Length: 354
Image 1 (tube, rainbow, N blue to C red):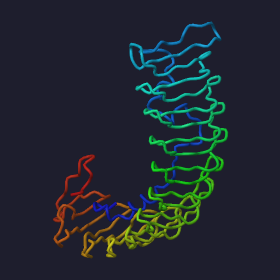
Image 2: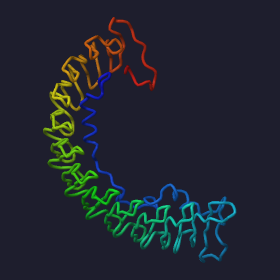
Image 3: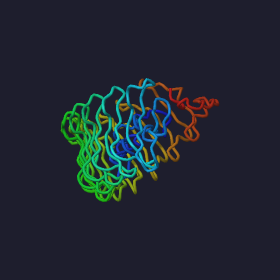
Image 4: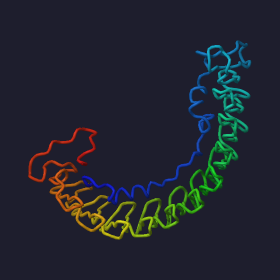
C-alpha cells in the first residue's frame, strides 16, 4: 500500500464496499441451547451439571431414575442459576436458567439429552428475547428474536436444522432492516437491506449462497453509492463508486473478484485524487495523488501493492514533506529525501505515517 494517505486509497474503499458477505445470527447448524439467546450466561451452565461452588449437585437416586440438578449464583444459596433433571448423564424434561436479577432467562425441554419443542428466552428486564422450535436437537420451524423494547428483531424458518424460506430483520423502531430468503441453508433469491429511515441500503441477488448479477448500495441520503455485477460470488466487469453528493469517486474493472487496469479516483469536488494501475488486485507501477484543490500530494511507484523506489511527498502549501519523502523498499521507507538511511520502525509502530 501507499506509505500514507489511506483516505485516498482505492483498495480501502473497495474492501469496505465488498465486505458484504451477509452473516445472519441464524446459522444452519445445531446450536447448544441458548447459544443464540444468552451465550455469555449459558456457555458455562450447560456443561456445569457436575456440582461445584454454589451448586447442590445431583440429588441421589437409583440408576435410571431422574436426578435433579440445581446451581446457584450465591453461596447462601438463595438465587438459582439453573435447574433441571437428568438421567444417565443426559438432560431430561424441562430446564430453566435465570438471570442474576431473578428473572427467568431461558426455559425449554430436553428429551434424551436433545432439545425439543419450543424454547423461550427473556431479556433481563423480563421482556421476550427469542423463541426457537427444536426437534431432536435441531432447529425446526419458526425462530424469532425481539429487541429489548419489545419490537420484533429477527424471524427465520428452519427445517430439521436447515435454514430455508423467508428471513427478515427489523430495526428497533419496527421498520424493516433486511429481507432475504434461503434454500437448503444458503442465501438464495433477492436480498434487500434498508437504512433505519426506510431507504434502501443495498440489494441484489443470491444463487445458492453466491452473489450474482447486478448489485447496488446506497448512501444514507438515498444517493447511489456503488453499482456493479457479480459472477459466481465474485465482482466482475465495471464497478462504479460515488460520493454522497453524487460525484464520481472512481470506476474500475474487476476480473474474478480482483481489481484490474488503470483507475482514477476523485475527491467529492470532482478534482482528481489518485491515479494508479491494478494488476491482479494490487497496484503496480506509477502512482500519483492530489489534494482537493488539484495540487500534487505524492508521486512514486508500487510493486505488488507496496511502495517501491523513490517517493516524493508535498504538504498542502506545496512544500516538501520530509517525513515521507524518500526511498521505499517493500512498503518501508529506508532512506530520507537526502539519501540518508532511515531506521526501520519498531514493530507495531504503524510504519512511516507522520
